[in-house]
Length: 199
Ligand code: SF4
Ligand code: FES
Image 1: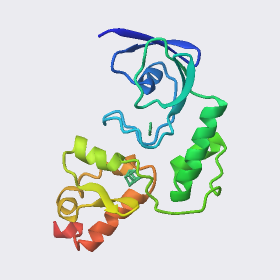
Image 2 (image 1 turned 135 degrees about the vertical axis):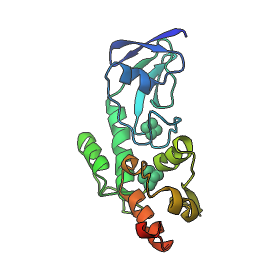
Image 3 (image 1 turned 90 degrees about the horizontal axis):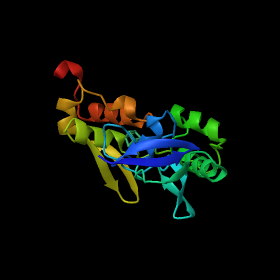
């Protein structure tokens, strides 16, 4: 596998072909925030909180570090005025959906995001897809999926699968950056009329 040399925050970083900018940064202990990324799952590129600045062919662009491949001679800045502003706006938008998320609040503090900037549309799910992808890619169950509710997508458990497979798994719960996943599960459990005693 050929070696790639790039620069991240002024440091020379050696990466292997196939690695993303995020993986290259993580390999030398440089932290880039993520919300929809999980090392065991396919890259998804949904939340854009991992946005960094990269110099490509003499031009500077904002890229999503979790999906962008590490390239020879790429020059990456993980913090800059533009990067911080982008992350701030993303957080402000996400906080309109999930204002009580502890993970979002911690990031908001770091980037100076105002959780009241946008009108609240509390859906509580930020559509990171971690639960859906974990259940599908790792557990091969598809007990939770995206339901199409017009303009508003949301996750939902499939009661027939959830009632038999979720109660002794729940591995997706700690992945959720908001409280929505657990709430959706409890609701599904209640509506499907199944309790632990029934099993
Ligand atoms: S329920 Fe949680 S983990 Fe699942 S997509 Fe929504 S925010 Fe992400
Ligand atoms: S972590 Fe990169 S787009 Fe979500």
